[in-house]
Length: 108
Image (cartoon, rainbow, N blue to C red; front, side, top):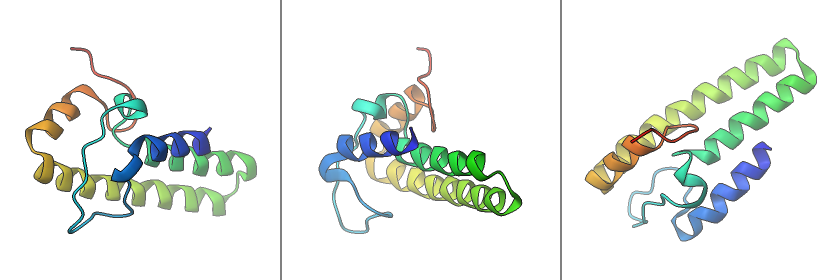
């Protein structure tokens, strides 16, 4: 399921997909498709993959790697949110009011 969520997020992102925070690339804010339900579906997909591996092997080593990955990905999200707020301003702030960071829409 994590793989499918990640793939869907990449397909919805189209030309705005970037690895990391772009310094010079101008992208559009994507709020449609799966991004209507999660501001970070690609990271949600990764987290689900790590938790799936943890459930399959359920040992301290996979527990450590899962925790490390989830924390690292969350820190990446926080950096991207600062970048998006700076680049897209009000449009991004309004989007944040409507859609949760990981999963779900806020009631209006």
